[in-house]
Amino acid sequence: MSISNFSINGTSITPTLYKGKSRDFSFLIDEPQQLGGQDLAANPVEYILAGYAGCLNVVINLVAKEQGITIDDLSINIKGDINVSKLLGMSSDGRAGFQSLNVSINFNTNVSEEKLKFLIDQVKQRCPVSDNLSQKTPINYQINTAKKDKIYV
Image (cartoon, rainbow, N blue to C red; front, side):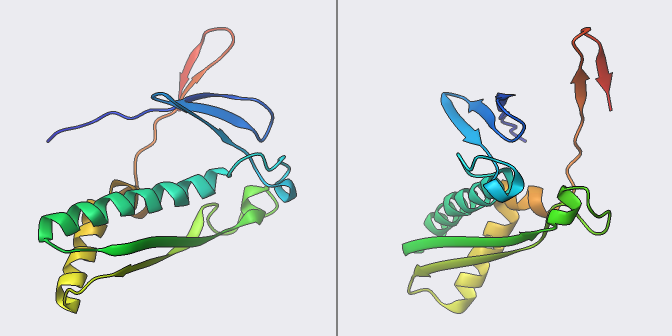
């Protein structure tokens, strides 16, 4: 097994605006105005969708190349619904995250339906973001206080 480590580091600029950095790339995350933000950048769940689409793009092309499948004009569109009442603390019902995701993959290819199903099955199994969204991933929190205390929860 070969493990690669990825990370982001960042700072809260305002209650809704976050400035992050990963490797040599900087990015902003904000909320739309209706959720209290200034709408200066995509929001956290939009970044999840973009990350998923980007991962699908990589893995579709990787598996297609391995299988000798030519893909033209690839587009990936993903939609999901969030329980905003849970996010805002107005309800304790349901999940706070996406209720479901609808993925639409569009491309031109001349392969059989059987090969296409095999391609998509492989993509679902091998896409790390798909795995993280569909499987429970342990999350460990380390909270550091101004007093330099470390609290693990």
